[in-house]
Image (cartoon, rainbow, N blue to C red):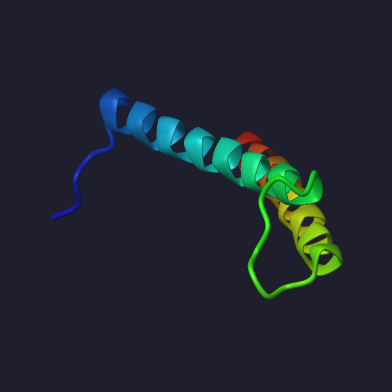
Length: 70
């Protein structure tokens, strides 16, 4: 039997999603700014990975908003 999604569960889902977005952006920008590094991986590769994280996070936010609007 499927459980109804009430306002509380929708709020919890929104908070979890928003937390994930903020953490992803923080990690991505930390990698870009060379604050977060990965041992044994060159800083240039870490910076590129940071940009990939930021771009994909922003794309996912846009797609989630578009999906919600449709």
